[in-house]
Image (cartoon, rainbow over all chains, first blue to last red; front, side, top):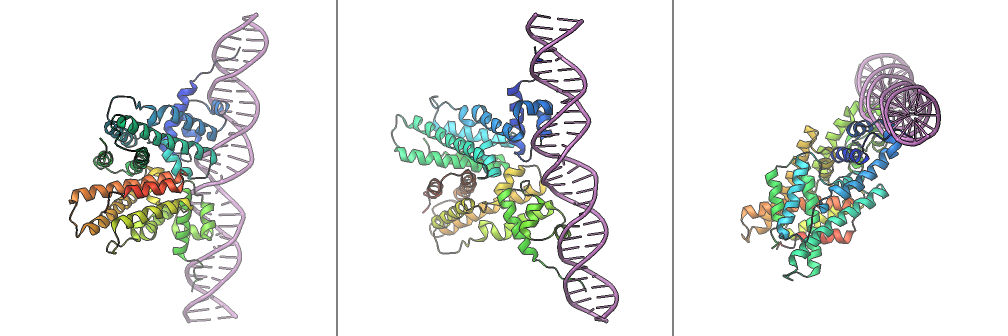
Length: 191
Length: 191
DNA sequence: GTTGTTATGGACCGTTCGGTCTATTATAGG
DNA sequence: CCTATAATAGACCGAACGGTCCATAACAAC
């Protein structure tokens, strides 16, 4: 029988995800990747096919395990304002401590509309972010029935834009206080 | 005497700016650049020193001639709401028609905080964008005195975040209608 | 222990990268 | 027309890129 695999594929993907998130696709060399993943070049190509294919895999992985909407349970009994404020704070932290923010946002900038596969994943990721905000708002309004559906959809979209605005501004090294101010003010209209 | 220069330096810089805006720094090869600039490699290095130095020059050029705040005169007799809506629409157009949005935003994502020179330029560019919004708001409120200064500063910051949020979302190929909706809703509180 | 199978390290590949250098061309002043 | 000077085209460079390949190492089944 065969020699067993000596690394955990999922772990390797997660390490690659770290690198891509911090350095972007073009900014991450194969050397950077295999060092972070702690595997050999052969294993890399054997397992993942190419840098590009790995990138698509990490995008999917990001969606499944790291995108903010994976951590949100809209049925939690917390106010929308609190939940959304935390989401923003989490994003700011993620950028400031060097993790790299939302990979979909980074990809939107790096690839713009040059790659169909990536555009598809990015667009759907952003839609899900918007949907998450929508769910949070809907849940909180359940017993109030204050806002009509249209309005909620609009606010959800606003929040998505604010989310990515924060991502850019945090990347530009603005100070945490200003960023938090934007975050808290964006949710001031709620509850 | 010497053979005279056969290209216009400023024009060449503007062409380089186009390329960098669309493709990013790492995404723009020397070949891409000299082809767009229509000069030879020798002239390139003779005139600009290196790809990196040229990039810093184009960042300065963007700030001087293409950044949105260069087109705004806050003393114009137009409502803040109208001016700001136009700014957002202009940004959306710039991204959708392939010009590439605000270079500072793109740089914030591509370089994060990895290059001191670039971070300095980017941060100051974003600050100026915020200042522009502030001026527009101040001017419009001049005769109203409705909002205290603190509030205006905060709104200016919100608008800056929305601006960059739109930039990411436009890059992600969201449709124009949704983007315009975000733009118009962001200014709904004004006037 | 032998065998069959597969993971692995690392040599190797062509291409492209940013950048240098030289030979040539063009031209304004004498 | 000659000469000094500067702009240019393109050959050339080493390094790094993404990617291939093969000899070897490791291990499960027998």
